[in-house]
Image (cartoon, rainbow, N blue to C red; front, side):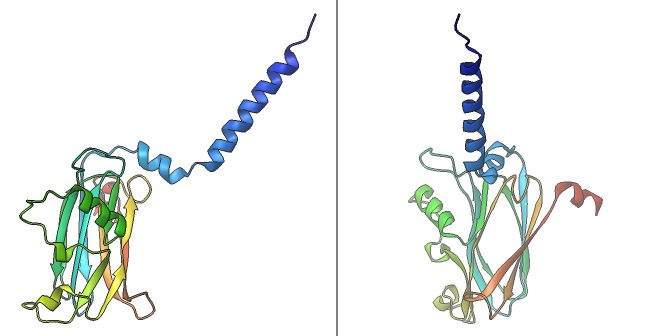
Length: 192
């Protein structure tokens, strides 16, 4: 009679090694982002702590959405120096301010007849300008830029959280400015 036990153990061991190897290759952020509930609203506060006008686009979208046209929750902003503003957007898997991925997503989803869309405000950075607000130069980076930030639901925030972005002048940063952010969890908002 032939003993099949070594064969079973070999198959079991091979399966275990394959699963462990697969888990080592999978980015846990990807798994968390794609299994987190995305219902509710996201409140975003932007503080312009610079002496310049900031122009940018921010929004939320679901990176796995392949419908046509793709959905995006877009806000385009010209923010005066020293101003704080808040926005409420539908929660989604991705949230960004001034990133190339967001610009690409908006370009793939934008309807040609959208009346409130301003191409000049859609750029892959936050622009800072010292130009007069009634000139075309106000939308150009006359004094510098800040690199954009993308956040993921389940990794950086949850739906119903508060995200606070602060625009800061920083000569050591690429472009002379940076974006700081903090997330205030929904349960912490209720305690305040």
